[in-house]
Image 1 (tube, rainbow, N blue to C red):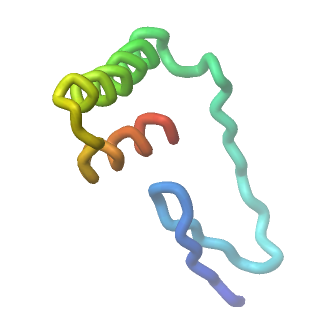
Image 2 (cartoon, helix red, strand yellow):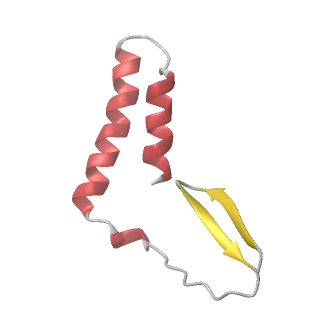
Image 3 (cartoon, rainbow, N blue to C red):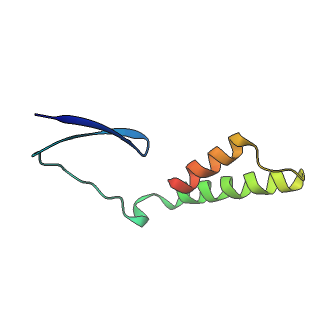
Length: 71
């Protein structure tokens, strides 16, 4: 048996030849609206704050935006 570890998304993925896997899908509307609104507000706030300060996004801000858009 050959087990392979792959990196992907935020968790490592383990795979092995000839195995059966369970796959779960998250539908677009599966998150509560309040969570989506919070993420949208945070994304907008990061961009607006940098613009008001007349500066580019910091690396930390860009990383946070990448995370918020990926979720």
